[in-house]
Length: 392
Image (cartoon, rainbow, N blue to C red; front, side):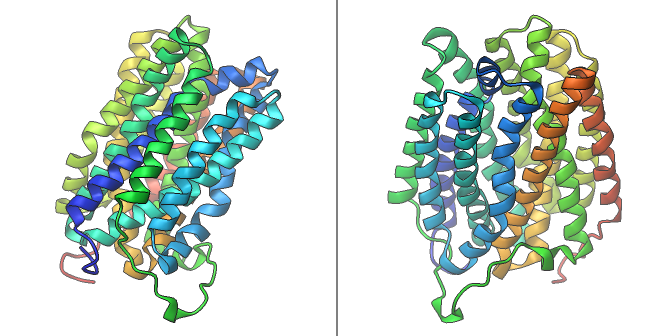
């Protein structure tokens, strides 16, 4: 616990429940959006825009919003963001063209920008560096559990109850997250109005540190591969006769591997350092993308997606903890905003570039291109300088 404001164990439980509820709802609609966009007449490029609009909005707003949470506290951003998540989710059912679908994705992206950096900074507030990797792992378990189990439940809802039902339930569970954060979440960082008006930052000062730059660049390249899977795996799987429910199951199993490995790998990074978990995870993920492009059956997709999920288990808690370690307590929000902005930029590039590759070269080549772009993200981490234990 950082400032004597809250009990770390009780608070992270409430935070994780709120994040799980919000991300579960978001996960409901993940396997449906490419198909929804196609029913509205979207091209491959426009399918990419549906996903990249979400990421572009996050990329433009996450770092300044995370920075503002360093001044005004974390709770207000988490509460407002979860409420907006709920409102944005219900709007999808009213989309009558691709442009409206993109607009609603922008709103959803802004809601995410309010919540995610503030929530990650909240975790960093509560735990010291010696336990931060494990704590980030616990938070990420809740985060990815929502994203991971959502596609399976969403696929079942769409198949059994009707295509729009996942959007209704998405709104409901996000509203549950809003209520939890509003009434049960305690503030981890009291606002300090004595500092005067906050200066909006986009994280450029933090990027001058070569260690932060290497982690942020790496996360951007990894996100290209993640975006390729989220946006185009449902279409590739459909091309080989794999249905919505089966695709939801594949994405859920991938995320299960990611979820179950988070805490353990985060704890390893606390004990042995951040560098090599990050490097190995990025390298394995890049290789897995090559095999995803070569897969043709449910079983082959399943095996490779499990490996890809485990690679994320290595990288995510170690890299998020590394950025917080380097940035320091007064800039946790800004640092987490920068970290998640890098992911959003990668998601934008992956979805947009993937759409162009799909239109001109076919779906399978999306994953080969994503793999090629991911390898530099692994190599740059070889220059990461591990901080010696006991030194600030």
